[in-house]
Amino acid sequence: MVTTFSKYLREFLVTDEHFRSSKRYMSADNDQLEIRNVLNGDTKAFAILVNRYKNMVFSLALQLLKNREEAEEVSQDVFLKIFKALEKFKGDSKFSTWVYRITYNTCLDQIKSNNRKQTTVVIDEINENQIRTMETALDIMDRSDREKSIKECLGKLPTEDGTLIRLFYYEELSLAEISKIVSLDKKTLKVRLFRARKRLAVILRTHLEPIQLQNYGQGNR
Image (tube, rainbow, N blue to C red; front, top):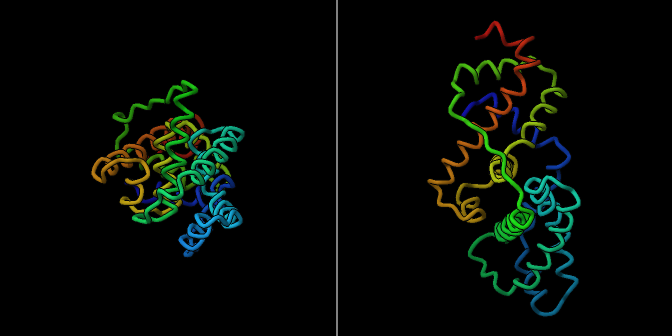
């Protein structure tokens, strides 16, 4: 959507502690071997899979639930579900995609059980000129202030929007992979992802206006 905004978003996701290390699974090319070993009764092989994917599962759960203790509990539940359903994994997608989908659905079930209300953000009022003003403010801010602002605003996004941004920008999953995780066709997913980025831009602009835009952005309107 917006080049500068996207750059700062990716920069934050790569450096923030909640998002670090989950990409370690990307180098795991022998999942099928460990899966076969587990199905043959080798419980140690499952411990290898848990260790390989625990950061990925926890960080996604934390993104969705926004509570560390809940994310830890749900992560344990996710791996229990994976263990019980492992024989159902047919290998028609990446194992990581399958793990993501179980994590995603388990978190949504937890959110529903908590009767947690989702944040709504009206996105129609933002225009390209306002986005450019916001980007100017981001450009001028020092990195720590910029990252703090983005972190606070990501936390205000509806959980599913934040998850889509995380999967696309940080995990760099393809639309095909994400569509399997969240059970959306690619056309709908593109629309949802666009709207998620725009919602984040609205939240960030609103967050910046009282402070940064007053100092940095007035001359760019």
